[in-house]
Length: 301
Image 1 (tube, rainbow, N blue to C red):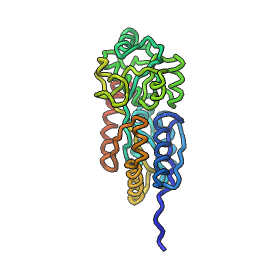
Image 2: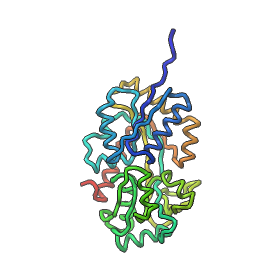
Image 3: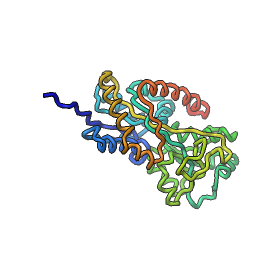
Image 4: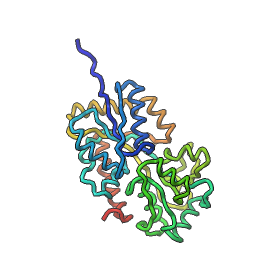
């Protein structure tokens, strides 16, 4: 008697501390895979450090040929691999799909004397070092955005006083505790504090205002910069074409499911789903573009 093939019980690695964007992505995937009965059980494992490159190295070294293992990553990891001179790169995993896109938002504590992008730029031009930025990993999207803002305003991007935190929770504590001037991250990481009024969003990195987000674009604030972070899922190295096809089918089902679409709306994530070979090509292009930006802001020689 032929039994229907059960999908894998997936183990999803979030190569970051709990609370940040990768962790939220992995846990949202876990919920959708289980709620939609795509996977019998999905587990999330956190391996933080060095912009995801510690988790990536562990994943590559320990999961070869294992079709149950997935890793969440994204634009931040592309930068971290370059800035950390990581011996393990995304060429060593099996890219599956880009899942989400998210704009960067700059926040200040509610009581801050910085009211808008113009106020931030004024301080930055007067003394770049006096403006401390709390964000995620060095060389990630947050850091790149801060460098691009400085560059657009004629400030030496290598003078940006950027403080990297490995989890969203730590950065948030530093901002709320007035240990830094501004915070920069994906909107989802600050959404509840912005809505509660403890943080004020002074700018968002989209070309046009984002529906449902009460923040002017950087461009409205006079700063000609736009950037979108993206997040992806990849499978283990050394899997067969059949295994890859089965994972692609599961992830596609998840990405199109009602519970995943609901999560995107709740988190303010854009649906930028791109799978298979088209995503592999896009990943190559993004890696080349990121290398150029990181050289510009002095993070990569």
